[in-house]
Image 1 (tube, rainbow, N blue to C red):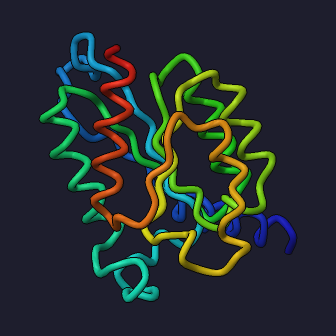
Image 2 (image 1 turned 30 degrees about the vertical axis):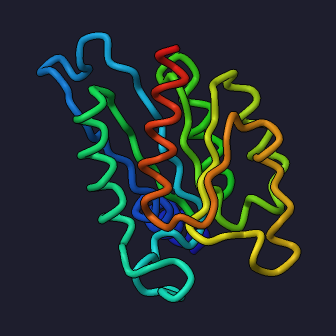
Length: 178
């Protein structure tokens, strides 16, 4: 019985994590000399378009990733996108970015205010990080103003909706290109 429950949970967990590479690539898998950016979408962002559209907008996570695909092509970079509602899965993916990615664009969602472990994983990579929030966290509940990520990020974009992801990607690429 336990084995069956564990397998079912493992299958559910794998289906919740969405990972794809988007952007310009060669047949060998990586565009020649292209920068690689890991985009991390935290908990509940899989509900975009349905969850509180008055705060987060009507765009879905797939819409945001499609916009990032277009931006990645224009900027001649590669973007890998991952979403999970599970802190450990996000930490594992961030750690795996070491040696594979050049920077991280992250919307930590609710983990912004609670996850020192996520912050520590970002620091451990040694990669530049840009933090994104769809809503203006400073115009909302006071607990949302605390971010464990902001102090280690090269920049924070808050309140510009889905367009903030593109701005964050552009800023990160500009910083990486010097």
